Image 1 (cartoon, rainbow, N blue to C red):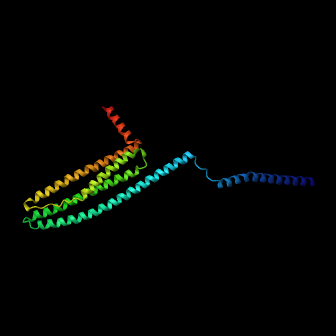
Image 2 (image 1 turned 90 degrees about the vertical axis):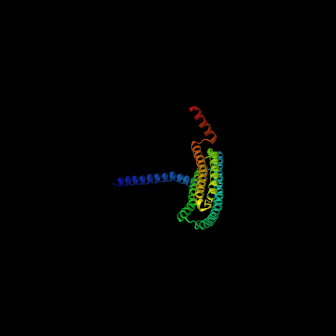
Image 3 (image 1 turned 120 degrees about the vertical axis):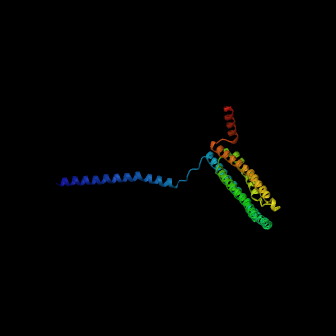
Length: 249
């Protein structure tokens, strides 16, 4: 029995020793891993290769310049818009003064119905001009915003520049048109109809001319979008178009 107990005791001791050795071995194995993780957590991020770093700096610089140019253009547009609003206020005062003079003349008409029609037409012409020019300016603003989204397409730089020039030209023409006064120049009661017709025809002719420039700006913007999507320069796109046209012939 004693031998049995001794044998069991020895086995138990051996088992404890084996477990202790296993735990110690595990600790020895795990410790380097922890040390490696701790070391890697404190290790600094490796710098980018020189070529990639130079490219990153170039891209950052380009985007920074693009953003600076965009902000500068927006400030210039805001300044021009403020001047334009001031001129519109001056136009309102000028038209109000002219309309007051015309009303005094119309009040002397014997035909009151004719006087009422003349007064209504006189007011409507200036309102039509204002509504038309307001809509065209809104369209030009949307075109400009669309070009801002294409600013990161280097291949379309020339097409974008051409479109911006077309927009600026159209905007200037629309702003000039918006400041015009179409108050009827009343001469005599018998000629009031002819006076009103002359102003109406003049308004229609002026609006048509300005609208052509807005359409030209729209076409230039459409071309810039097409070039940006194709990834080709304006010259390359023109050559492709010419080649396509000659092939069809």
